[in-house]
Length: 82
Image (cartoon, rainbow, N blue to C red; front, top):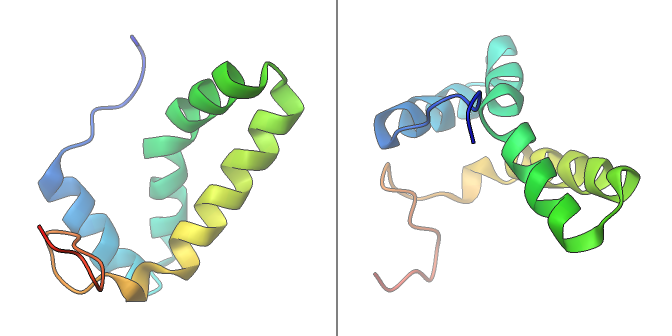
């Protein structure tokens, strides 16, 4: 959709590293990069803005809290077979 910020693999890798270092701006960057898309997706599934907003909140909090589980810059989580 127009207006969504572009996200690339290199930018995602930098964001993961910033989240791992607990940089203050990393949380805002995570939100700015993904919240609108996640909200649109969650809304398409639920049809409710409040449910979509809660889902985005939960997803971003989980992503930030689980960033240490990523084992490589490629983003392959433990147990990944790709």
